[in-house]
Image (tube, rainbow, N blue to C red):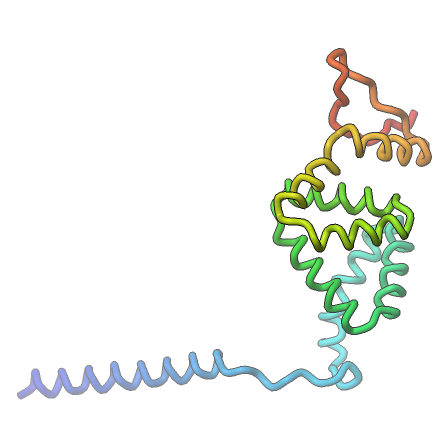
Length: 179
């Protein structure tokens, strides 16, 4: 009889602990109340949101004009343009390094194009197959096409042209030495 009572007590304790754990998990999983409008946030909540931006701003004085320009452009965008920009950033974040390099090369190539040519490329891009797009981005990142624009930008910034190897190929891009 004692064993039976002990078993019942243990099962009751186990049941109560499972019930308590289940309630605690349900409370954690339950969605919290929606956060209020910006004006109704507490100073601590605002600080939590602003702190990373302040760190980036203070940590990169040369990048401040670029950050300010990005902020201005963001404010001028329509909600649809902002959503498209977010999708693009999300897509870029999930690319592997080779895909990122090709995307950067294509971006730089397109930025140097006149607006009419850029628009034509966008229209053509929508009609291309995945293989054709890959070929185009692979060609955009080839050393022959992108090196010239890189060298022009370096010279404009006061950098020097990297030496050509004996084989005739260009070495990896390194920051220009400031002597």
